[in-house]
Figure (cartoon, rainbow, N blue to C red):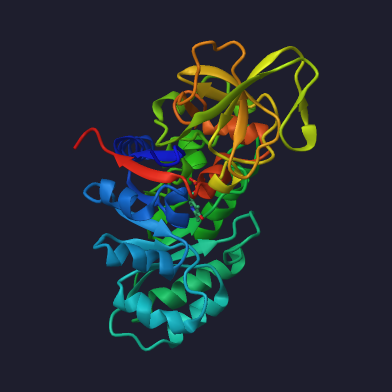
Amino acid sequence: MSRPAVANIRLDAFRHNYTLAKKLHGGRALAVIKANAYGHGAVQCARAIEDQADGFAVASIEEALVLREAGIASPILLLEGFFEDAEIPEIEDSNLWIVVHHSWQVQAILAARLSRPLTVWLKMDSGMHRVGLAPDEYRLAYENLKRHPNVAQIVLMSHFACADELVSMHPLQQIKTFRAATTGIDAPVSLSNSAGILGWPSSHADWSRPGIMLYGADPLLEKDKGSDVSGNLLRPVMQFASAVISLRTIPKGEPVGYGCAFVAERPIRVGVVACGYADGYPRVAPTGTPVAVDGKLTRLIGRVSMDMLTVDLTDLPDANLGSRVELWGDQVQVNEVASRAGTIAYELLCNVKRARFQYSDTSQ
Ligand SMILES: *Cc1c(COP(=O)(O)O)cnc(C)c1O
């Protein structure tokens, strides 16, 4: 048998989450599959929803070409547009949509010699202050692009800084800024990422851009939620799992693992699991982080090493060599592991590597 660390990707869950995102928001939905579909496999995920998806969004032309080469013909939006003018011919050839977030990109489009016009998503900095045209330069840029033969259609877009915080006032301020700067412009609008879809109905417009929710992780911060808005309706797509490869019982007072960072408070049965930070399990996850062994919850103990981690099997007498250990998936939420590790589900999912990827699709 080969090393048991696996990432099982359930494409039926991915499809379910896309359908749900689209229904909750209304209108059309670009499935955000940048960074290899948040670590899940961009080609497999795109193929799973190709029939119903209104389009896809990625971070770069390289990511888009992987999809085109796999035969995905749907619209693909480049979320940062082009990084240099030299990419424009390739964008034209591969029929990609582009975000335009900076005045130099506007100038480059106006100056380009094209054989067919481009679809532009014109991005406003409505308050996040990362990328986007300032509200007071937005309308002029829109008008210059609109009347130029190099531009086919324009979608007006912006992105939220704090949509995951339901108690924040910032998303509403951003929506207000965006609406004020676009009054009277007759063009489709896109504001909502996953948190916008789930938490901010006033951000709903013509197009949504769900990312993390497609993978089954709810981006809304637990502490802000009164009742669960939609979290239980999302289905986790990745099951990250491995198996127990070694077992021992150690007496009270003995340490486990690197740095002797954990010391047994009582005689303890320790299971060693073939998964470590080189597979993408966070090294900073502390003792106490939940794991599920043969379906039963227990805890991580000691430091995570490169290829292995250790779990507490003291209260799981049936656990043995070969027992399946879920690191995250159905029983252990990736959000829970992320919060223990001081990060977000996005980062954990993107980091999964080396483990064998297996794809399943029960509805096909
Ligand atoms: C990544 C990204 C998204 C998706 O965000 P989620 O929080 O994963 O839903 C949407 N829009 C833009 C511009 C992005 O860069």
